[in-house]
Length: 303
Length: 281
Image (spheres, each protein chain N blue to C red):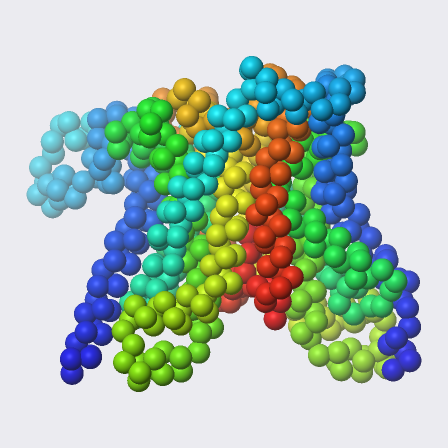
């Protein structure tokens, strides 16, 4: 009895602390969403409220249920339609274009790098060739190089190829990565090779095996890796900032920084743009979360 | 059997695209970086005179160099983030297991910052720090504020890593300990910590390596100010190489010096990867 009581107390305390933590995590998002619906004047006078003043429950209740029409409140409602900041972020900031760019970059990076990494991973897992261990170890070593050292030379290389300020220059350095190869190779090694041997006896080529046997079996790993690659590409900031100068090619992250500089006084609009920029990825992860169970525990999955 | 042991030359075609690209943008790039650091590189002319180690000398001892200030700030930032991370991620993982309900919700909420672009997080916190007493405008609190944001962004992800580690501890150990009358602290100290050692070291090393390269939050929130109190190395390198300064050689030298600092931790991580099952299995 005493044991159970202590246990239950522990659970309740843990729940309370976790709820507090959840509030700490959620608060900045609620603040951003709430602020993105405020008018400029509302934001400057009432920064703290999470609900825009004109939509405060008491006021709405008075208006719609009580039937009392406060002239000041009416004016507030009239000169600021709910989604105005969002519309303005698109019309004046071109956020839709940045979103589109980010989407295209992330999609290209994800598909190409999955393809290249898969080819390499399969060869390292199943094929026999001189220098296999050495080449694989070299690849592993590249994983240890911090991006801050490669930023400048990467730019010089891209400059040499003539891809500065070109969309290809943004995505090219992410077309392959040691981490993806490593992860997929681990996964491929765990697939029993009997399946393949049978297919080989039936005259199936390596290429055929990779696409018809290995790829379908590796779906969970491919989806997890694909999601994290997509996320990495979507969130990347420093590299596109360095390599691009034409605003038309900006991805969302760089576009947002630019938008902030152009609208320094208009924070509701900036935050609306920020909400638009984060929503797609959050939605994507929400939809895909059943594939991600255990994905994180593949450890170090952050690109 | 004979079929399988034959050398397949086609393998080189399979690995070529990924291998060459990775090499070009990592090892080869590092060589380029070192070569650049020995030259007085002019980004516009695309060439420069060989100057030996003069760039390194300027970074380390030059009168206009902010390297030491930046190194001090970055190290302070790393320490604050590391402390904050250790004080939050593991306790949160333990609490998340103890709180039997709502675990899915907690996991999702705590993971959110990992899938939010750093620029957006920085913009939101720029406003929040403004509301909470102009934290970013004072040279005494700005770096601390940025570090707190770093902890906020990373703790959920690390919590998930710890949760994964905790799930691998066999329940029998705890039962046996309870039989022996162990209290929860000695359970934690003698079972949880030893089992989590690998995860713990992994989180610490990755946090350090990541935090030494902090850039986005500084770029968006403070630009190195006020009074250089948030001048960090990655930002300094970026400014020297790509802003008005355009001093690629000088910036490359600074990057290499930062790499030496990070290199210590990279070395630890490599040793770990070799000796323990952090990645494998």
